[in-house]
Length: 196
Image (cartoon, rainbow, N blue to C red; front, side, top):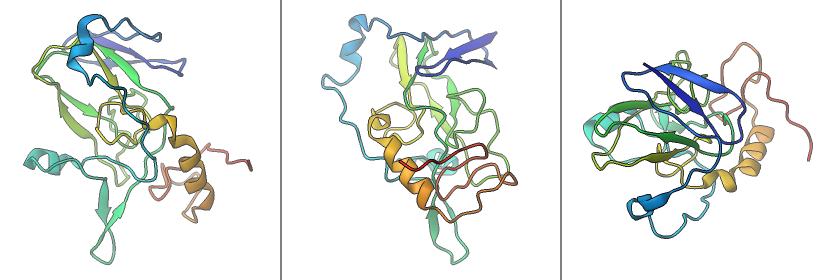
């Protein structure tokens, strides 16, 4: 079956092949009784100064969430910064409990919020996420890629745009059409940085 995904703030609809059909809404859905499954208080927007992406191998070993890193030449690990598809969550409906999904961590996927392997040739890897066993009708899936609770949205997108802009403006990385993404700042070909 085909899974249709539409996200807040984005006019495109993406399709991905999945075993089960799911649907999304581009308007705020009624939460009904689901509020008991989520935190009673609204999350505070977090700073976007660092990424909170998880390495697939760490997740498989049961290591807790940590910022995405990649080996650097000096043996240390360097911070990776994703591209932002848009600032707001994807509202995903009817995921099957126990189902495994691959969340896009690079921001390049054309099938947001899920990975379509667009990260190949970059330092990014998808986050493998198992849908919780507790049934839930909707999930707010992060699409700014800077959540501290991947893949769930924690409202980081509310304070993130200026941090991303400043980081991209200050970056001295290779910003050419020859690369998919500058992992030092999240810049992608076609990004235009204007002076504010």
